[in-house]
Amino acid sequence: MRPHRLCRAVVLLGVVCTPVTAIGQTIAGWVVDDGTSVPLSAVAVMLLDSTDVAVALAESDSAGRFSMEAPRAGMYRVRADRLGYGDLISEVFSLDDAGPVELVVRMVPEPLEVAGLVVTAEQRMRTELEEVGFFRRRNNSLGYFFDAEELERIRPLVVTDVLRRVPSVRVSGSVVRSLRSYKPTCSMKIVLNGFKIENDSTADLNFLVNTDLLIGIEVYPGAGGIGAPVQHRGTDAFCGIVMIWTR
Image 1: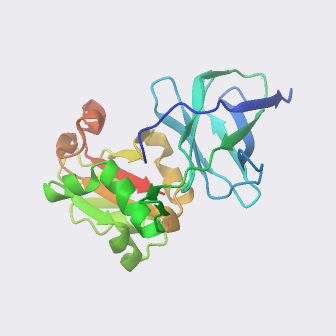
Image 2 (image 1 turned 120 degrees about the horizontal axis):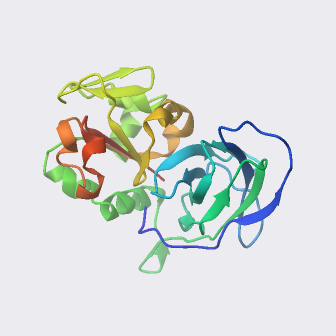
């Protein structure tokens, strides 16, 4: 949740010349510790297009493996997040319809220290929320907020279990709509760890976001997402904004 920095580029191991459908290209790979090469599980991996919109989502398994599909050919970057490691955003790379691509994502450990001591997980979560302005916005009372303590009390099975608790929000499957917008039939903008999720990817949220990793949720049901950070408002937030933060 710290300001994102450009880290080590994702390593392309090779391109397997296996035919794929024309709609996209399969991207698979491993996430490992940069120093030890030990596989890392529970890493949130996003495929970002040229406008930094997340168009594909995945989470590494116990073997560090992940797989996702690009919706189309184009220029992309990979972003990876995991507690205890520096946020990774790769160099830009090109995808075409040649076949599946395999990547190795190497993450650098980055413990947060205060007065020479590594902070507890609870302190780390609060610090990360403070860094992204969560508590400052909550003090303005312009939206609905769920911090790590509240989420621990709720113990949701899926992300949408939390969103159902917001009075002016309706959830159908995994589609989230606001009753306070001018168009109650359109879905709210979803922002995960600072990156917009394409509307047609909202169905992946309950699968992608491990509720054990949730540290905060902000919901702005008003038209235009009033109260949310300025950079996330706009015509794509006409029906409100949901912001989700994970460790």
